[in-house]
Image 1: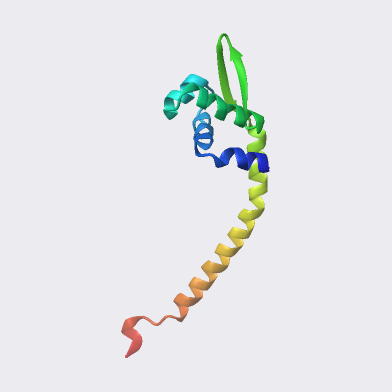
Image 2 (image 1 turned 180 degrees about the vertical axis):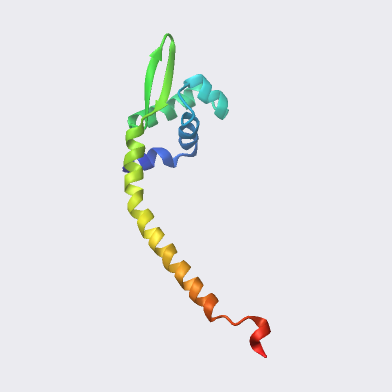
Length: 111
């Protein structure tokens, strides 16, 4: 999981992942859409590949990159435990706010 977070911590790599959510792209397409040069884009894609977040397929003389779902499913599973905690806290906050509203006296009734 640390490898995943390290790879996604770099803004350009996170943008690449966002681009690849829409489907596979070549290095040139990623570079063009992000306004990066091709060697720089290739380095970012290599880091994402090494982290297991993307996979590459050679098609003729092009390299096509696409997301691998497994690391993202693992990340989602890990985040699920935090979602439960957040949901419980939001539920308690809702209860507290409702309690405060019930205790509040409308301005017209203060006479």
